[in-house]
Length: 113
Image 1 (cartoon, rainbow, N blue to C red):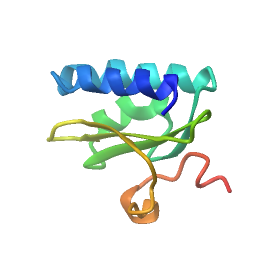
Image 2: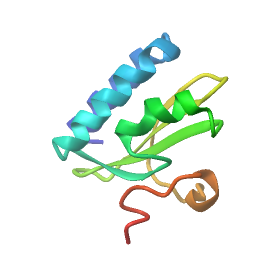
Image 3: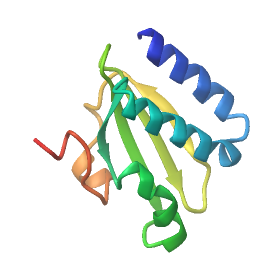
Image 4: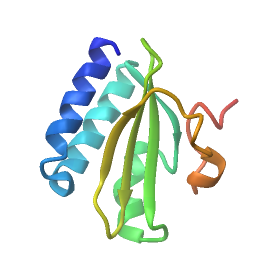
């Protein structure tokens, strides 16, 4: 992992202390890192600035996003379950993830092939 991913991993460890309170700040941080082109939205349910609206509408039970580090290609996952605990994790690969079935939305580099 690179320095960017080390930083994200450290933020995720801290966020897990109170995941419900920390989800929005972490999502905002990742959105800013994407704007800075340090990470890219690889695949997700919605655009990052639409997360709050999706949660309020409660049309879907989950809102998930996979990011990819532009430096080391590490994957970063955030998942929010409407009635559950947010998930923050880093992943070496997505070989075990079926993005077509996992996500209800179709945004990100994976879907823009």
